[in-house]
Image (cartoon, rainbow, N blue to C red):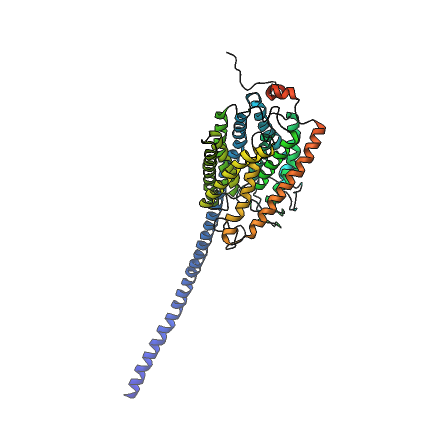
Amino acid sequence: MKFAGWKCSLRHWLMLGVILFATIPLAAQQTSASSPASGTSLTASTDSAKAINDKLAQLDKDVKAAQGSADNAWMLVSAALVLMMTGPGLALFYGGLVRRKNTLAIMMQSFALMALITVMWALVGYSLCFGGSGPVIGSFEHAFLRGVGAEPNPDYAATIPQMTFMVYQLMFAIITPALITGATAERMRFSGTVLFMALWFLVVYAPLAHMVWGKGGWLNASLGGKFPTLDFAGGTVVHISSGVSALVCALYLGKRVGYPKRPMPPHSMVLSFIGACLLWVGWFGFNAGSALAAGSLASSAFVATHFGAAAAALSWSAAEWLKNGRASALGAISGAVAGLVAITPAAGFVGPMPALAIGAVAGVLCFGMVTKVKAAFGYDDALDAFGVHGAGGTIGALLTGVFAQQVINPIFGAGKAVGGLDGHWGQVGNQLVGVLVAWGFALVGTIVLLKVVDLTTGLRVPEEHEVEGLDITQHGEEAYNLET
């Protein structure tokens, strides 16, 4: 009985051993079979992750390309708008304000500067303004536009080609000396105008543009300036420099024959009205374009520009109404231009309500400069270049220090105060430094250059030429053929 039980148990153990022996190779085969599948799964997972990363990288590249294309399109349109401000805008505005016999002469000055400054800009101008990192003037790094191509310059505009940035800034360089011609109208030689403006561009405009906008410039607010002056689109560089230089030119040339005893009204308010409207539209490229991108800052500057112009047109007209009992078309368009000038340095730093305030103040004060101050001192600023641009630019530059806010443009860094409304009243002092530097450069540079040009080509036309008119005596043409 015991033996039989033992044999049964032995048989059971033998059967169990055979089963285990048979299952071990099968398990090994299953393990061996499953290993390649596991490796394949791991490889597939890796490939999938790589594909996703590649797609994300491509998506990021496409988004940046789209942003760059949008920014570039906006900047090219803005450049065209700013050029439109000189011709036809300023040419028509000034052309209508002079007497009929000088219409072509004043228009030709604006047109000639479009060509002259463009060539000078390509040769050395752009490099002097935006090359290098000196405190006062640029370098010859980009002379003959060397190195200026499709790649962006990250110091100035990281999303557009440097070629686009270059041509946009060119349009500012064109209109600035053209503004001065409003003070010298009806009595300055064409040859003297061309030589003076060429030298003025090199001696006055280029240093100021580099100091305020160029890397390392003494007044640059974002690229290492010692006295960070806020000038979004040219209050100091464009309007103070041209306006103050215009005053010096008017004083140096003296009064027109018969001024102020003989009336010298505008010969065509229609031309001036059209020119002023073109200036207003073009100014959106001037100010909103200075954001250098098609983003929210451009929108803010666009709105501030429009509001400033509108408030100034109303305040000038209101002041004129109180003084004369009526509001004139000339006063309304002059007020709009004064508001556009004043909001220029502030456009990218202030909100809509401060823009209205700046425009309103500028309209009243520039009206006083044109009607009271000019009469009191007796200078002949023929088309009020100083009263509008010099005074308006100064007012706007100082008020920028008061109203600038970091919520609009955190130029000094996130959360850091920008202007007086943020509690940084020291910025008003920085603005004052910028204004004084611009005034100083324009005064001294213009006086020296006028002397040089007067000795070289002469500045003022002979009296008989002035009486006959500059269209005939300087260009051999007339603006209107009145034969019947």
